[in-house]
Amino acid sequence: MLTQINGLHHVTSLASGAQENNAFFTRVLGLRRVKKTVNFDAPEVYHLYYGDETGTPGSVMTYFPFPGAKRGRAGAGEVGTTIFSVPEGALPWWRERLASFDLHGLKEARVFGENRLYFEGPDGDGFALAEVPGDARAPWLAGGVDADHAIRGFRGAHVRLSDGGATEELLRFMNYEVRERADGLVRLGVPGGNGADLIELETLADGTHARQGAGSVHHIAFSVDHREAQLEVRKALADTGYSVTSVIDRDYFWAIYFRSPGGVLFEVATNEPGFERDEDTAHLGQALKLPSQHAHLREVLEEKYLEPIHD
Picture 1 (spheres, rainbow, N blue to C red):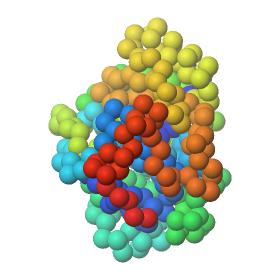
Picture 2: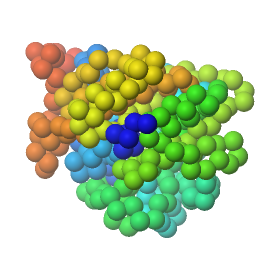
Picture 3: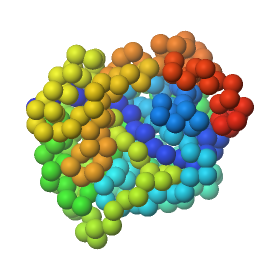
Picture 4: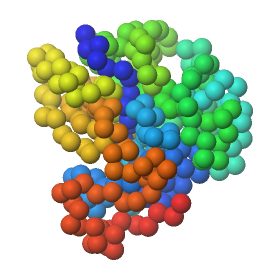
């Protein structure tokens, strides 16, 4: 078992526009933009990161906003819902707030004894707020949401699959244990995890497969403390038969990637060095930061490709 894994590190999705995406996370959800950089493989596209004050692993939602991208199609083989943690009793306040922004898909539900509010992002992204008593993680409070209601970070993710058995086996190998089964869902969690440590698996009966596009989750990343732990995880996964990439420097963490049995792209990311490596805490996410290999493209990127983001 891979006891090095703490829970989620970040979730990365696709969007159709940077300005709308930024406004949604900072003005509607009250998160902080902690980094404004570009896609390593497509530098003409932003990579935007949102989270708590410092972008603590387990709080960070990231986006590749491809201008004008068509919406994805929901189905099996994807993370269908990203679930955030909010304080107990916060949902009525959030329902009123989200309704005031005319968000679609507002729906309350009780899942595994937990009160949730489901809603859609600008591109039909699937989100939920879950009331979690006693979540002691510190929220970002400069985003227009007070401490009694502010998002604490991720609660977890809801994954839709054609057959959940092999993915459940993989997650159990990755330090997740089965907590509950009900209504066709399996809930797994990391013992003593980082708060962003739940995964729910749903098996879809109709066989419809997801097609990625705006609003789709591109990949889901799991947290390990440091590079040594990541190398241990990589070796164990490879020894088990998974095709795992080499370690890739993403400036703010090191990453490895592999495809889960259900088709979802998994990443294992380090908690080091963090988002303060090139900006101090007070100014996180303000300046455009470019990977060294793309630094020479700054002028053309800013003038021709990257739309201005107005905070």
